[in-house]
Length: 234
Image (cartoon, rainbow, N blue to C red; front, side, top):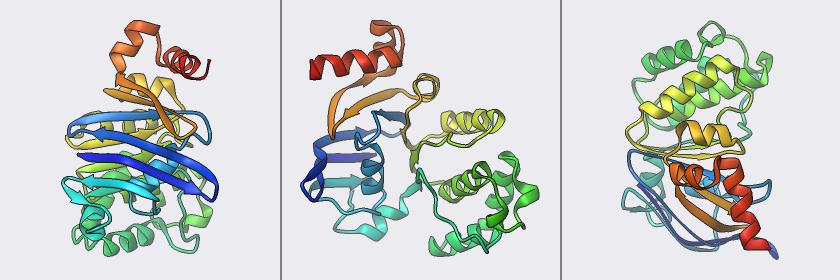
């Protein structure tokens, strides 16, 4: 479980997140939707412990992210929107490096399993600099899930993925037992995998609730987002 309480993030005079509250439950897939600049990626970076924030608290399975950052981050997996990798390393070398940072001792078996599942096993020993965007996304995804984290943060997870891999990722998300949080622009992904959706706009939560309730009321998640935004900014 991830509990985000009254969190504010500023970039100079610009408020990226304005006293936001989120509760991401166990065994629940929660989606966050919003326009570019709404604060989705900022929120996930903060929850992952890779970005500071100005005020508020974040608890990861009862551990304060600020007071015990190492323990809290050990409970997380994080897929950034734009993964940074070392082009001169092979995919396998990069994954083993990430595993060593996490002190994950059984990495080889998990790397083999997920690379085969995502269709990149034959390219593990090629340099990352030769990869396509989609292949880099697959390696980044493996790095975020190979240690089987209880809490998983995914920022635009289907970006650059082919349809078959996208389906595999959806199946993986639906099979998870922990907390899964997805920041996405895709209403269809939300409808396919999410239980709860938060609509975020200009750094504030404009609405949230069960995905099925929004679909029943508005017909689709896309229509629900626009209707909720109209109410707030009319």
